Amino acid sequence: MDIRQIKTFLAVAEHLNFTRAAETLRLAQPAVSISIAKLEEALELTLFNRQGRQITLTAEGEVFLRHARRIVDDLSSAEREMTELKGLVRGEVRIGIPPMLSSYYFPRVISDFRVAYPNLNLSVMGQGAGEIQQLIRSGDVDLGVIAGSNIPDGLEARCFLREEIVACVPQDHALAGRDSLRLEELWREPLILFKQGFYLREWIDSLQRDLPQTPNVVFETNLFSLVRSLIREGVGVSALLRMVVADEPQVAAVSFEPPLSLDLHIAWKSDGYLSQANQAFRDFLLERIESYRQGMVFANTEE
Image (tube, rainbow, N blue to C red; front, side, top):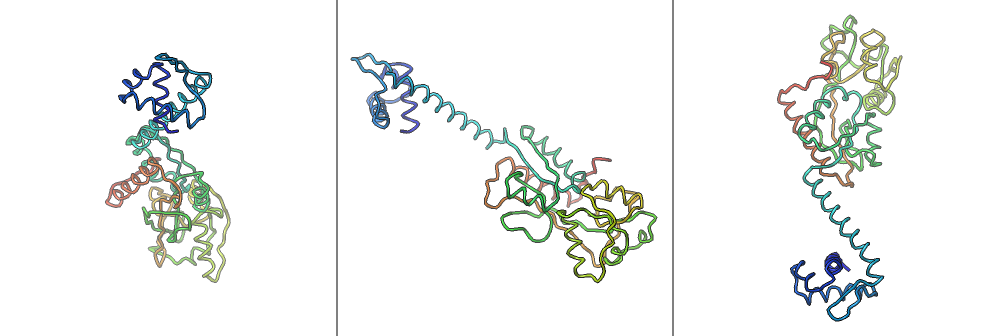
């Protein structure tokens, strides 16, 4: 049984006449008769009563008619939805973004993407880079921003930005006027860090193993805005991406010696299906970043 046989059955059931059904389908009448006979053979049921030129549906034919209509309707609906998705008339993008980037750059990208693709829905989840990796693997998000030089197993990724990691201190701090500082100098200060699961915290923990002293951690949080506010208030210092404090007059950004940087990637599940909508967002992001690298300014939404 195939869909052509079902459509032929529906035409015969509608007209109750093989000749008129054949005309509707633009088939030869014998082809219609053969198709119905093969369908009945496959089902091992008689679908039509044949009395000379008169035909009617059998009780089994009436039951099959309901299913046949549903099958054809569902197929038409599926074909229509696939066409819409292919043409990006519909679709959903589910992306995970670290909190540090949620107020910088991405709001403008998302806004511009909505203008370019108004019929696509976006769902954004804010999590640490480690948690985002798990969300991609579990299928809870389709795309995610991850950090670091090594791509985890099971994921594919494209690097879209390399950003400098800087020491962030209050403007009146003794280190604020420095051109650069060593990492161990920051270690001596009261440190405000992200909690475990955030890439910058993992980065600091990994560097700690190579230094003789233990960082003086005084506060941990998963809220980026709180980290920045506490630095402004003089509670402590931290290490952040330069771009996220570029508009903070009360926070001084000091380069490390040697310089440190962080690679940001847009990642997806390597063995999973990436929809047309998600591919569109990924490609849009990479194109916008290229413009950013060439000098276009993506303003902080708070400006």
